Image 1 (cartoon, rainbow, N blue to C red):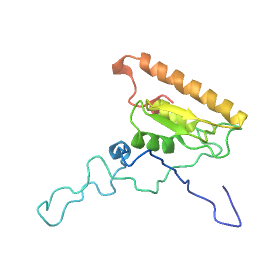
Image 2: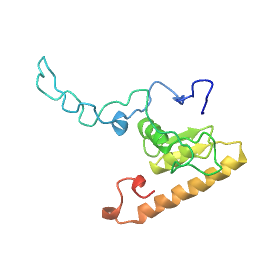
Image 3: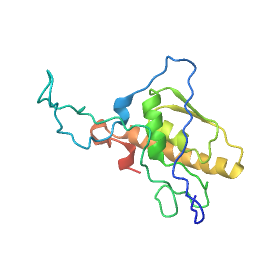
Amino acid sequence: MHARHFFSGRYETILWFTKSDNYYFHLDSVRVPQKQPTKRFYKGPRKGEISSNPLGKNPGDVWKITNIKNGHPEKISDGHPCQYPLKLVERLVTSMSRPGDIVLDPFGGVASTLVGAIKHGRIGIGAEINKKYYRLGEQRLETAMSEMKAVSKMKKADRPTSLDSIL
């Protein structure tokens, strides 16, 4: 939210619920590049070896992801005022669920979570009470499903490595 007389909110609170303490978390799917990938241990038995994980580092609990505003390629015209970026949703979906798992979004909005779930082979379930947002979400889901079908029909060698390259 833009503000002139107070600080603008620049964060989203993420609620993550599990049935038990036996939950799935896949850090490797969401690692980010190291600031110093060639940093080495300076003492101890591993002195001289590279100390960072070659897959990248844990992104931590503060993520810098551009919000969706006018002019953003994901922005749905006349859509939800607080539309979530797919990059945020995809990080959550891929790190906290396996392909085939169910992802629930009880505040569906324009179906960003469900689109992210579909793109990564999950089953998305959402709820939305605003009919306008519900209809916009349905359109986004239809588009995502048709893109998934188009990718699955391609020969394996011709398929892009991610849907981002065809969106």
